[in-house]
Length: 405
Image (tube, rainbow, N blue to C red; front, side, top):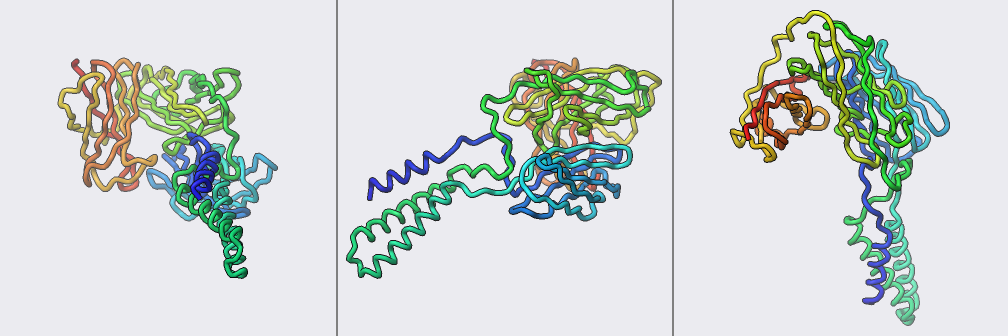
């Protein structure tokens, strides 16, 4: 019996596979945030457990809006399409799907269009689950045979015991084993993927202050130079784009639309002329995170930022931050916190010279405070913006920090 149990244990271990990063769990909802003229809109694609089935797509907006979005779902396997529409904060659209695998969701609102690539994943049974079920079945059949022969067959009794031992061993190890890859999952990249190359541009080439313009990021594979179109959704967006004026007075945290393979675009309007710095946080599938940066110029006459932007009064621990050492930042909030981009709050920190940018996630510190922890790399002044959602609106609170040593 000891040998049987040992063999079963080794069999189960031989079936395990290494855990993979960026694997979306089958049956879980997918949340993708995009920045439209109406504000931040999160599209929620509900998970499915079997196919065919309706794929439920809803929209949530900050600030709240009743804008209608026209949806078209297209299979990248057979080209089949289905269409519908949904209003932000009002119900969902049911788009029929017949198979697992890659799809594109085209979203249109007014003159803005974004295409979101994703995969419909369906849970699959792991090999060890089938081993366990089969062992229990064999044990049951042999046990019945042993009863019918009045226990006279040692072979039947021994086989039933061995099968039961295998089944129980697999059952006990199952919680510690990785789940089977779901149906519709993408093939695994054997050697990972190279970093992306990115180029920022504006249309018009020299935007004017207080006039709408398009900021575009074009992504290319670092090895082939071809358009890069395999971003993974991280913190509920394929890309997080931070735009600040060089002096830090103007700040934008947006999530560009995918307008073509490897092309991300967002419409912006800024109140002041001057030089602007742009940073894009992205992650490729089966790869790591990356920060791309660029700059552009804005012409025209300045106007003041809206007076509603209050400055935060942070509490720092230690009170005098030290370069290379973690600092905890606590800020007071107003109203009940609502999750935004999957977190209670976000903190963007930029060095005064623009060479360093950090993005930290906060935890709720009681009912009316947020707490962040991060490490500042060098001495000097840092510009910071704390962001959180409350009452259906997005709040941004700027402040500065000094690192003296």
